Length: 149
Image (tube, rainbow, N blue to C red; front, side, top):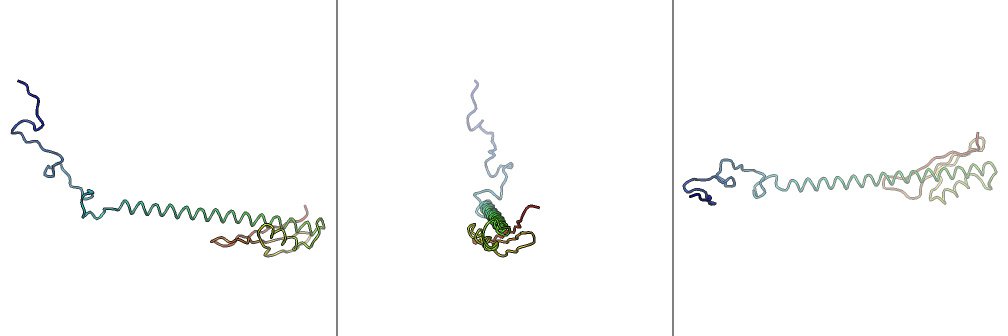
């Protein structure tokens, strides 16, 4: 008679359960989650929080640098426009005193003139600063304009 083996196996034969703690093949892992004495328990959470904080700080830094670059571009554009308008006034193409014209154009571009120097040959050099300051400082622009050579 052939009988199919039962769950318990054959009588009198001891089967080793690999899940049983006394089984020689069973490894005791100190990082096992049920072990309350494990010194590394929760280390993954701390690591994830640290990496998340690092990502947030990097994003803030990138945003500040991008804002500073945009502000520098606006300050340079204000200086360019102010210098061109002042050079036109110095050549007599438009009415007004060159540095006053430069100050008016800079003001309309949300900037103020830090310096305005009339040079030889109806050239004008203008330095501007934006009225709005960033957390990393103010943005300035420098431009020189005059008649073509």
